[in-house]
Amino acid sequence: MLREALLAASASTRIRDVITTLPVSRDVVARFVAGDSADEALAAVGQLADAGLLATIDYLGEHTTDREQAAAVADEYIALLGRLGRDGLATAAEVSVKPTAVGLGLAEHGEKTALENIVRIAVAARNAGTTVTLDMEDHFWVDATLRLVSELRADFPDLGCVLQAYLRRTAADCRALAAAGSRVRLCKGAYEGAGDVALPTRHDVDLSYARCVRILMRGAGYPMLATHDPRLIELGGVAAATAGRDSSQFEYQMLYGLRPAEQRRLAAAGARVRVYVPYGSDWYGYLVRRLAERPANLAFFLRALSSRH
View 1 (tube, rainbow, N blue to C red):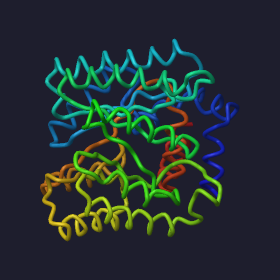
View 2: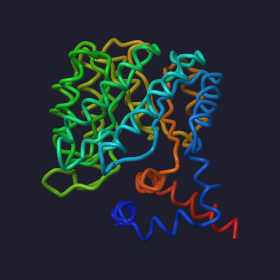
View 3: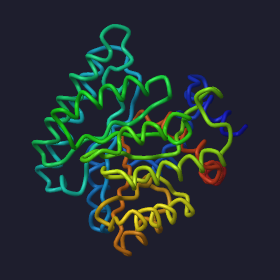
View 4: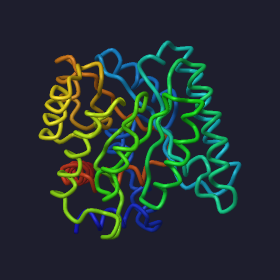
């Protein structure tokens, strides 16, 4: 019930207004968000690179309401990618893009607008020497996002996409996407879904995640295992070894600010580890979904708030 309450809060304008105006909130958010600006995000990427960690950068925001706003988000990514190339960080970082941030949810021509903006971002990524992963949002957008992935991969075969283990359909999607050249980030998922589309319990989601890991490891693509769960991290390593993969043929992914010691431990052991680095002022929805994913995150947040009053 706590998870459901937090996911509802992530969509609440009233709660958003309260939390984002608390004077202590920004200090707490700094643990999970690299900062408001591209400068701060790039500084975080540089620090991660020095520690042997890769990064994927997310400019926070979703559900844009007009074409100009969607284009502005794409422009931000294009400028960021230019800087990654100039600063010599393109080999250490890619970018993650939410399709609704670049227009997918627009009432008119949303899919066309998103496609056009993602093409612009993907071209900039190619020019910089890196690539793009399309984030997956709530279940309503899965089919549209996968259509974008299918169309874009004709010109950008290294485009990555995300699948979420909490959805009943995801094992089938993994089978469809586990092809040569495919890059798939598998996560548990941080959105709500009705019983006909979503699995009912955390245990069911864990079993789904394990099943999907095995499918991806047996396929011809490049699995990206996004989890902080020690059991699933270990399972990923076993599944890779069973499939005959070495450490260069898959990677682990974790969120900025979560289990940094484990990120470094895995990297020191020879694993490829990529950290999801969000930045921007529109952090509320992202943060609350992170709290919903893991109760320990909520405990940290509440302790930090109480300690600063």
